[in-house]
Image 1 (cartoon, helix red, strand yellow):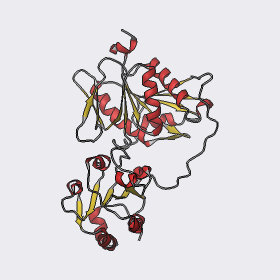
Image 2: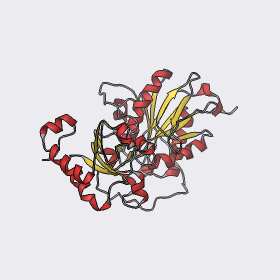
Image 3: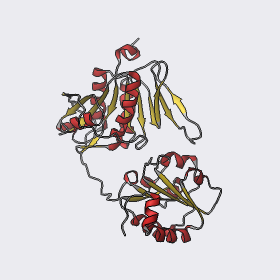
Length: 346
C-alpha cells in the first residue's frame, strides 16, 4: 500500500483558490461555501491553497470567507499562471499537508491544472461536478451530469486520497464575508527549478463586455430568435443595469454568437436575479446552466415549450410583438416592483 491508499493519513477539505493578478476569483470563493458544508459532516477543517505573486494580503480575506487554514506560496516566479509550475507547487503542498478532499473551480485554469496534479498524486479526478455529498463511509460523492444531462452520475474515489474534483463556476453561492472569523495563515517557500514551459509574453484580455456569469439580468436568445432582430435584444438588455446577453448552444453552433455567451451544460452556469429566455425551447442541457436563476421569464410562441416548466413568468407569443410591449410595461414602476428586478435605467 502506498501513502495515497492509506486514508488515515489524510484529513481536511482543501479548496485551491485561484487568483489572477492579485484578485480572488469568485468561482473559488463559491467552493468555500460548499467546503464548509462538507467539513461540518466530516468534522474537519477547511484549508485553502493559493499560488501567486504579492498575494499575502489575500490570506485574511480567505479566512473571512470560510477557511480555517490558509496556505499560500508567494514568489515572483508565480506572477503569471504557468500550468507546469503551478501543478508542481500545488502537488508539493498537497503531499505535505494531505487533505482528504481537494476542490478546484472548473475555470480554464482549473481544468488545465487539476488533471496534472491528480496524475502526480496517483489519484482520480471528477470534472464539472454540480453537487457534492459525503456517503456512509466518509467518501466524497462527486455528482455530475454525464453527456446529455438526463441522469446524474454519482462518483466516488474509495481507495485513494486525496479525492479530487472540479466544480462548475456559479453552481454554488458565494459565502457571506464574516470579519469576525479567525484562522491560521501559513506561508510556504517553494520554487520550481528550470521549468520546461516558459512564458515569453502575457497579454491582458481586451474583452470589455460584462461576462454573462456576472450579470444580474441575462437576456438570452435561442434558435427561435432571428439574427436580424438583434436590436430587440440590445434594447431589452440595455434597459437594465448590470445586464448581459446570453444564448443557447444552437446559436453558438450556428456561428451567431461566441462560445463565451453560451449558457448551459457545455457553456456557462449562471445565477442572475432575472433570466429572460427568448425563443429557447428548454432542453435539459440549457436548463442545467440557468436553473439557479432567482426569476425566469420565458417568451416563446410554442405553448408546449419545456422552458415554461422552469419559468416563474411565461409569455406565449411572437417576440417581435412581445418585447416592445414588455419594454412599455417595464417603464411602469409597478411592473418593476412586481418582477423584483434590479433598478433599471429610465
